[in-house]
Image 1 (cartoon, one colour):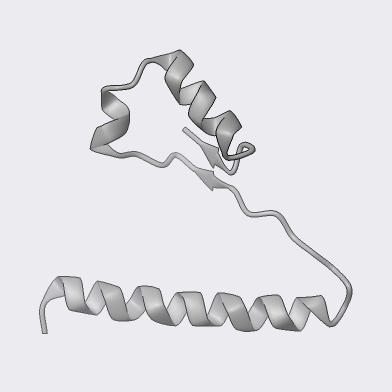
Image 2 (image 1 turned 135 degrees about the vertical axis):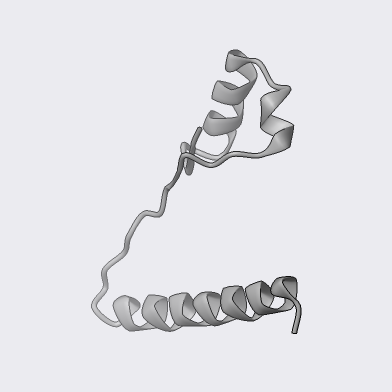
Length: 65
């Protein structure tokens, strides 16, 4: 099995667990907020600071770059 296949399987399992947790928490009439911090991408390296701030705002500060 290749590394990418293993990563895909791991991501699928994590997403499944997250959905199960979401269903469980909804039973409490509760909610939560997710935020991705220190995310990096080669596409972001070409962006200026104002573009990055616009990107963060576009996604309601879900990403903190």
